[in-house]
Image 1 (cartoon, each protein chain N blue to C red):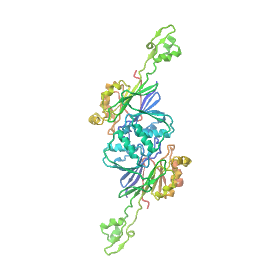
Image 2 (image 1 turned 45 degrees about the vertical axis):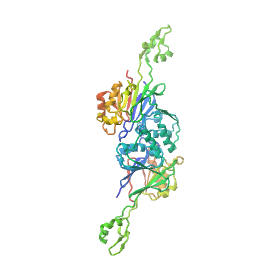
Image 3 (image 1 turned 180 degrees about the vertical axis):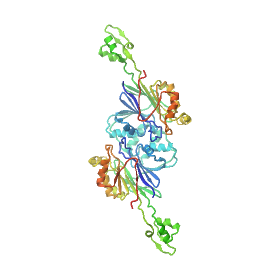
Image 4 (image 1 turned 90 degrees about the horizontal axis):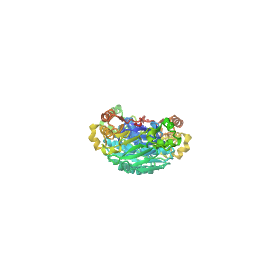
Length: 308
Length: 308
C-alpha cells in the first residue's frame, strides 16, 4: 500500500507559544512530499523531526497571513545553501511572488534552483497539481483575506487480482495490468469476463482536505464530501463563537459540524489559539459532535488508510 | 549597580539546525531591552526563555540577510495581537521598511502601534540612539551586503561618595548628586575640595560591541577599542579561512585576533556554521589567541560587569 501520511509541523494560530509553532504540515502521498503552509520556523521543525527537506518539491500556501508563510523565505534560502538544484513549485496567492522577490532583492539572494509559481485562481475544485498518483484541488475558504484550502486526492489505486483467478482464466501476464486498472478480460475463445468478476477488492481513492483558516461556511461542504481525513481549523472553544465569527475563524463545534455534514471519515482540528494551554477541552467539544476527531500535535504523524 | 546583561536567543549562521536558531540577542541595559537582530523564530525563543517581549522598544537589525531579520514580521504581528500600543523603534538598513510594508499590505495587517524607522547611514560611530543611560553607535562591517555592527555604551555612571567623607566635610544633602556627577565641593569657607578627593571610585562606562557578520577587517578595531565585551562572529574554524574570506565571514582565530587588537576585555563568539555540531574546537581555537573567550549559547545570559 502506498504511503498517505500527514505529519504536523505546527498547530498554533497567529501567536505561537513556547510549545506550539505556527501552521505547517507535511503530507507524504506515494513519496511525494507536499509542504502545506509554512509558518515561521518550519525549517527548524523539519530539522527537529528529521525530515529531509530537499525532498519537498511542492509547497502549498493557503493565504498570506504571516503565520502561514513567514517560514518560507528561510526554508528556500536553506535549500539553496545546502545545494539544491531541483526546481521547486509554489502554489499560493499571486502576491507571494512579489514578497519573495523584494526580500531576495535586498539580501542579494540568487537561488541555485528555479522557483515555479502557480498562483491561486480562487476557484472551487480548481485542479492545481496532477501527476500519475495524485491530484490537488483548491477550495475557496471564507477568511479575512483571500484564502484557499486544498483537497489532496489519490488517483484510483489498482485493484487486486488473485493468483487463483489468473490460473482459472489462464490470463496472460501482459494483460494483468489492464485488468487491475479496471479492464475486462477477453478470452482466446472470444468470451468477455467482466472486470468485477476478476478483481478481489477495489479500493476507493483516499482524500485529505485541508481547511486552514476559515469561518464556518457550509458552502465548503460539497468540496470536501466523503474525505478520509478533514483538517479543519478550530481556533476557539464555542464560548468564543462571536470572537470566531469576528476574526473569520471557527470553533471546535463548528469544525466537527463540518465533518458531520461533509460525511468525513475522520476530523483533525488545529490552529489553536494561544489562550488554550490544555487542548483537551477543544477535543472534548469536537468529539461531542463528531466522535472520530483527533488533535493536531506537532511531530505526530497520522496515516490515512483505505476506508474499504 | 544597574543591569548590563546579554542573553543569546540564536547563535547559528544562515542555516539553522535543530539545536541552534539564527541570530538574535537581547541586551538589557538599565531595564532598556534592546533586541539585536531578529532571525527566524526569535519570538518563539523569547517565549521559551520567558522574556516579556512587550518590554522591547528598540530593535537593531545589522543587515538584510534572512538569518538576521526574518523573525521580525512575526514578532511585530504578535506584539500587535497581544495588545501593544507603545511605539516601537527599528534601526536597520533603509530597505527593511519596504519589506515590512509589502508583507503587511498583502496580509492586510494594520498595527495598533507606531513603527518608527531609523535607517542606518552606514557611518562609523554614528550615534543612532541616546537617552540618559545609554548611547548606541553603528560600526560599518565588511560583509557581502551593507552591514552595520553596533556599540552599546553606558553613560558614565555616578561615582560613589562615602558617609565618612560627607561627615568630614559636612556636605549638605542637596550637593551630593553634583559631586557624584563629577563636581567639586565649595565649602562655606570658600575652600574648593576637588572631586577626586571626595569620591571613592569612579567607574568606567561599560561597552558592548556587536559584530554580527563580517570578514576580518582591521578598520573595525578603532571603533571597538577597550570594550568590556566584544561579540564577533566566528562562522568557521581556521582550516576554512579561504571559505570565510569568500563568504565575507570570519574564523574563530580572526575573531580572537580582533579581541586582542582592540584590547577587548572579553570575547564572545557565535554565528556558527551548521557543520559544527560540537562547538569546543571553535572555542579552543579562539582561546589559543585570546584566553578570555566564551561561546554564545542560546538561553544563556552574560552579565557585563565594571572592569575597575
